[in-house]
Image 1 (cartoon, rainbow, N blue to C red):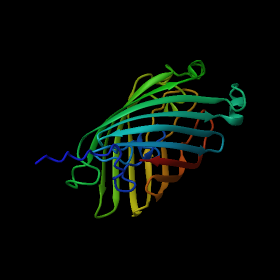
Image 2 (cartoon, one colour; image 1 turned 90 degrees about the vertical axis):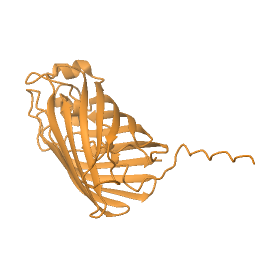
Image 3 (tube, one colour; image 1 turned 90 degrees about the horizontal axis):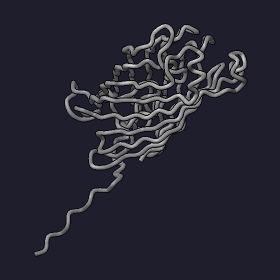
Image 4 (cartoon, rainbow, N blue to C red; image 1 turned 120 degrees about the horizontal axis):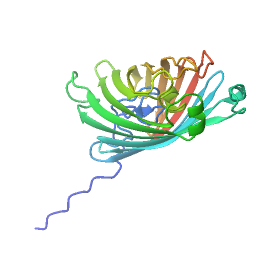
Length: 276
């Protein structure tokens, strides 16, 4: 008898549990809004490929921030992502001598690999652990150097550990980041106070209230390299909702502290992600 040919696995199996691929961070990698997690972008499992696209906006009292990008997950093991960030200085641009509505722009290229563990399955005490690299390139090199940055480009290195405790519907994440980015890199890298990389921490805690809704908060420490203004740590409180399996909408209250001498930068984040 002739053997039947093996059935080919689909390229996109769209089979992850809802919300377990995370959302898009401010740098475009998968995770929370502020923190990178060990999740892999897209809804593909270890048998397939996943893809996602996002658009995110943050409204602050004196600034506007927007990003958009794409990410690809390969066999739930490797992630490749790109994001373009645009930072609108509004009236502050005139006060800083840059011109009203001047925009800082940055490209972020990132890669991540999950080394061991699984976000959902396996021992509760063994989280998914991933290492990542994010190369950031400011498109306004002359300006960021003028405000004191040592360079217009830089590379961050991350190690993340994430676990969803299914019995409690709680996700816990911790990330160590080696970086010298000023304001996530939008104001360059290194500065007149400190030029090299420092070790920073990102933490997340979320409760999956239902299959389609997660509530949580994040905290992210940041380096303080520039003499023109102290850079504060950032935090957010968020709600992520998946009205359908391929769409996630995230709303958050975010506080990034002082930005280029203007204090009290607290506002709203809204992000939309499509994933397959």
